[in-house]
Image (cartoon, rainbow, N blue to C red; front, side, top):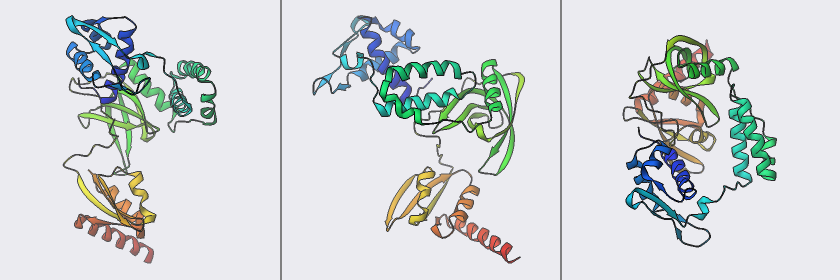
Length: 315
């Protein structure tokens, strides 16, 4: 199964100290330990040839070999040393752990990790103690989602779709819980879409754990979120906005394909969408601070929406 770049990076960082602490390791043993093929381990080793450590010398490449099927790593002292966290890193890690601790059934175990990390980090952990974390999710929803995952049971949910401003009912075979950009998501195989989908937990209106075993197809793969949640497709509509300085917040709040400065604080942004209804609502919300330039038919629809809204004021 393909892995994300972040998962491979974690394996590479763990592979070096794993080998150093054992003097030498066979390719077969390393592959079994990391749950990958021997070919993948060799590909990782070939990539490690390109790694350059900046300390203690200006140029300090990792020296390794795997001749005869035995892996030996030298000149990698910086990676083999224990990780040291600075204030920003310790604070970010502790805040993330406190977020996870809000999930039922994880709280006690994560709280113990937080306590140990705070002691180890010392003064670097102090800034994080000033941050309060609370998930914007109903506790009963979290409990039921976790129950479905633990018991391998299908979930039936009523889910609010903001793009269409409607509730939909669907059966989902749960795969994993995620926290992305501060929001909690359930990743699962949606029986309605016949595909892997992400569901934001605060948009789940109602949820039931069914007495049906979850059956996730072999072709279902976890989503690679390294590039963000939004993954446009060639079929999406390409929409161009021109925004004034007061409306350029759109570029910060929505994933844009391109952003071009127009001077005096104005900006032109291009985004893609599967459903233009939310784009029409966004254009109305912008009022005089932004307008749709392309496609022309979508701009005409927004003008018609605005005209109908103005007639309601007259009425």
